[in-house]
Image (cartoon, rainbow over the protein chains, first blue to last red):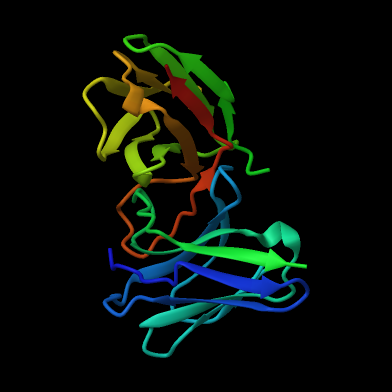
Length: 111
Length: 119
């Protein structure tokens, strides 16, 4: 599975959009981009995933560049409860595959 | 709430002891994964079971073992415990877990974890 690079931390103002970047320059054609977050020692929470196209759900939007070498997770209106560590994971054939968590981005939403 | 349950929530025990952690997957999910999260190692994959059979192994110590029962719940057994085994243990479940379809995607959903403290 391709390796990902994320900034170690970022701050965001409550009510504003949070844009979390992830670089995955060695991603291959069949690898998916997954995002999870972990709120203070709770179980990792699935957010969203995508292959090529941009995706949106009730939690977030995922923008994948055309060359698929990077992506951005967008939390449209950050709240204090969005303070967490966000993990970008690239995984091939997710069925039956383990998730490899890197360091993630520690996001602090400030009032 | 992911639908994955884990018991107990907290466990405090002594070195040399043996403990069992339990995981119930989401209804209908056939695959269970176990992960360990310690302060210095981050989240690490331990082992995966699919419909009762072991499918993949990660950095799981020989002192640790797991199994998945016919009702699909899983147990992680940790024996001869050491101080360094203190960690959060998470299980995750997914609906499939087969590697047959190269394009299949199968999201893993995590439980709330068991915090193990070895004194």
